[in-house]
Image 1 (cartoon, helix red, strand yellow):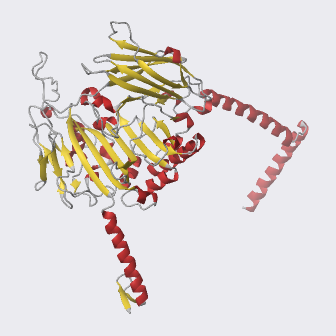
Image 2 (tube, helix red, strand yellow; image 1 turned 60 degrees about the vertical axis):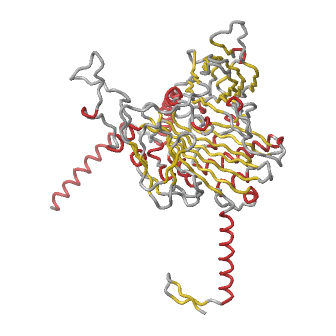
Image 3 (cartoon, one colour; image 1 turned 30 degrees about the horizontal axis):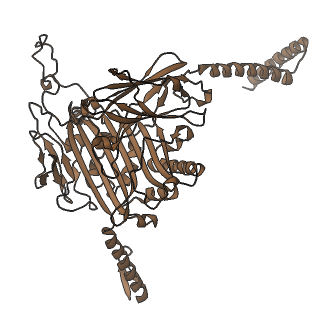
Length: 605
């Protein structure tokens, strides 16, 4: 029996036994793939929400479930194998990784999407629950986890050492289920890299973890040029086990999120020209109501109308159909837009549209069908939907000089009737040494009964030079319509000259403070409801910096002395000393021989 190979265009003989073996392997593989289709589920959705100030929030969510038994046996289907093997090797039971860039303006945009759970501090933030028998083993596995994730995501996570690692006590709690595991064997470790630059080399590994790899579905909109041109962007990866309370069946869940705030005006300008340029005069909308307005000068009127835009205009491309692995159940939307009711929305023709319970317009994607959304110009502008945040937080440095300083954090509760309980966490570098006796929490306006103590619980772990940083956790109670100002003083350490980075005069980045609001504040009693999380901006600490030109001067001075000494010694060793009269005789003899040579040369010619 023979078979035809199109590649080689030759007849290749093989036996009937080989044919039966190949058929059996093919059928087995087909049955495994068919069975796995029902084992793992994958869902993705995109939420578009216009914000104040001509901004647009685009929230991408990718979620997949799979049996935890298959995960433990390394039978990866939709779960990324590269990440799963790292978690198994390091015995990581729950993982949370954040890449953030920019600042979320809560005064203008309101509350963060997902109660701030998908956003991290500026740079890279990582925390995980690692299973181990003791602290030493947990730290070793934590180091292995950082090194492995560093290579996977092309980030500097391997620089998260003991000086950048803390163990929160009150701020974090597991969001997964661990029914068959001893909770005393789980160790929570948290690390940050506030100076880490987030760029395209981190986005590419993020997309490779998705089943469709950014080739189809909503992930086709994710382009590095658009994502990192946003005013705020955050990428998050969460892995946790989820168990059913009814039958005890456990799944492993991986959830990937990207939140980005696009400046519509700037994105439309970059569409016309990669280099931003001023608008032409006829494109400006002038404010003629001002007394100083004239025909010669134009004072642009901000937000006089809603700019027209579409997905292809903002992202440079449309959605290339749905992902084949995504859930295909009816009434399962893939793209939703939370626009006001009076804002016109025009999707691609033939797209199935339905309204959700919260007033959003949702759409279902189809395979091999291009999808786009267009919003025409709206005049006068509509009022965007805005959710009031539970808390406003600001943090800054105080004091002056190169020896001492202070930190001031302002927490404001906007509610008029409900008080709020928060957990305030700071992870400080070891060279920033706070004075705990200067910690003060002041309530404004001051209470009438004189009891202004708002700190109900405090945890403090001091730093050890070059071994670990400072950890400060405080539980605060903020009354309704009040402001709490937390202040403390610190001392700046003097580093060794080898510990300064190349850009020492720029300063040292201090990680963002983490403010956690328990879930019961939102009136929810469900299981595994995550708490609301708020991150402040990072700080730039200026330390006493030596004059790094002095080592250069010392090197030049030393090299000059060495050159003079070495040259003098060499001259003494290899120079031949002769008398003056010998030198004169040698000179006369040389002149005579030179004249004789010239005469001979002339005769020869």
